[in-house]
Length: 307
Image (spheres, rainbow, N blue to C red):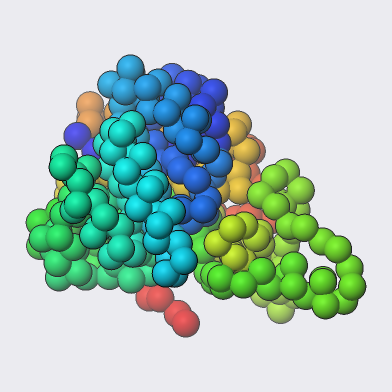
């Protein structure tokens, strides 16, 4: 059964998303995880794991940051903590995480998420032999590439089906440093105001969300991926998990998306023809709350990646 994976903003939000039909949750602390929808410190992590497990759902801890030597002691301690609270999976991009997990007496399975690097099934299978049970594919892949990887992969395959994607990341606080240089104080945070911080490309009439956090500066895509009308080939070919990324989105927006994708998946599983007939209406509640400056697109599902 295909898993519906979501990114909650708080423990209370998890309760709502369980009711909306989510199967699994990505949570973590920005010190270790990249572009999280919400910040979960250790106490919140413990509470979230207990809540999620009490409903028979799964919880994945994001430890997919890019780590330097001075991070390693903290990463090791965090891996120990995750094994104490027994999350279901640890999401990683850095081999350091693999090494620390292997040292555990009862290692937690890994999900490989190295953003744009996950582009072929040899990579997926290589990390599978190192302990990964799943690979989250790069958002720049076409449908044919996704299905080809699924056909040859020895691990589960996860695909993002909704939300914005990261176009650029720098470890430096580029905008904060710029305003400091100008002797202007500007702190950029992930909050309601951050949603209004946009880079404007007049030539293409695109607006790119920008925010800074512990991991540096992130410039996000001007459009939101929306594949709710394109799920048939993914579900028919056994893609293991469909992810809704809620970074820089409101709780209400994530709730509506979760509800609609849950309905789409269930409808397909019950009757693929019914899904084909009704899929065009499933997007309507999401479109009703979609920000005007963020049109939907299908990502690179049907088009070649352009750099």
